[in-house]
Amino acid sequence: MNRAALDRLGRPGIAGIGLLLFCLSYYTGSVAPGADELARLESEKAQLSAAERAAPAAAEAAPGQTLPGFTSATASLKALAAIAQQHGLSIEQATYQLSDKEGQRRLEVSLPLKAAYPTLRGYLRDVLALPAAPVLDELTLQRQQAGEPQVEASLRLSFYFAPLG
Image 1 (cartoon, rainbow, N blue to C red):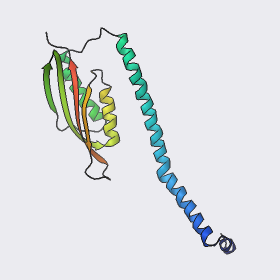
Image 2 (image 1 turned 135 degrees about the vertical axis):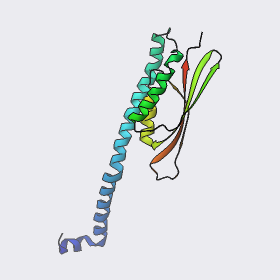
Image 3 (image 1 turned 60 degrees about the horizontal axis):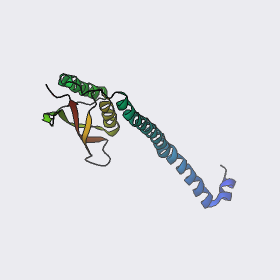
Image 4 (image 1 turned 180 degrees about the horizontal axis):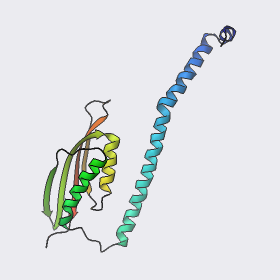
């Protein structure tokens, strides 16, 4: 701009142009990527809602379906580790507890994990989609500091199996 145009704008006009440029850069750097993430999350929510609505229909279609045998427990645990590896997670420690209550055989698995939140969410989504149909009993998320990208998660899953005998 030349000097005459700046004189016509005056200080308020120059400040207004500066504010417009700041708003434009803020929008393209912060708001637009957030809108893309929001659209992706809403799409994922719609997919999960559709799967949730389809689940009762699938259960009604196969009323004679039984629980898997306990021999598939090893395959379920290997699947947990394989999915963790796919998402770049390492399972350094896991706690397992087997219980037989009221004729129901249950394997409870506790996993402490540490990763970025989207990674943990993706891992959990894939684990809950396993054919063995694990149940999410508990999920605890914690960050040491607000700006830290890593989230510490405590995850407890249950796998149900047909009773022995």
